[in-house]
Length: 330
Image (cartoon, rainbow, N blue to C red):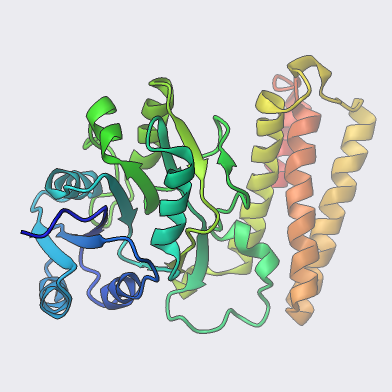
């Protein structure tokens, strides 16, 4: 009998027969000397997914499969955990394409840090689902506003920073210490559900563990082309500005009472100026649909989100600021 592989890649899948060959192909092409297997968990698919999986298992002895009939991403992940015999488990979504050094990048992180008290995740890089070029108006600087996750450097993540469950490496002993994925949360078929990956990381951190970012473990995530719209880019940039203010307030170097809060007239003037820039560059984009005009509108939207919440800080009860917040959002 051959020894157990050092790494098991667990790929839960549900009705993604059109994407699965690209995902499994990228795993088959991994440039690594470490022994690994790919365990594909069919989560009750009703399309051609079982035939695609069987074909790969016949073609490559590193691939094997099992079926989990209970619909739910956490059920499928846990089925993979129970069947794996490796020391390190990697999780990949079925609509992803991984870089050829994906496995080796994770292997190096755990060789350096050890498997004690550590789990890790890598970058999510959005790509159009048809693998064609971005729209002519889209600048890759806007990737963070359509789903890019990239902390850029190898480090321990802070409490408000998370990696995503579709690109995560978890030592088997972590599951022994804190249990499996929470089956009451997570995606179920077409229902997005809640986030089993953040719940798992919160539970791990509460037990004294750390979450690392592995910049070399790059995974490219397909996004439906109809979801790549200027409106989505701008509204996400606005929300991201608000979120970044909240993070600085809670975790930044300044204390809660040290954050600069402008006077009402200055805050209102700054917000109106920012909104004017956002409106101007949005109108320019409507006229010309250029990358540069949308990028300027995106930067303005992000700045307005930041300035709105900075100006509203400690003014939540004010009717004026509630009204300004609603107008800005619209």
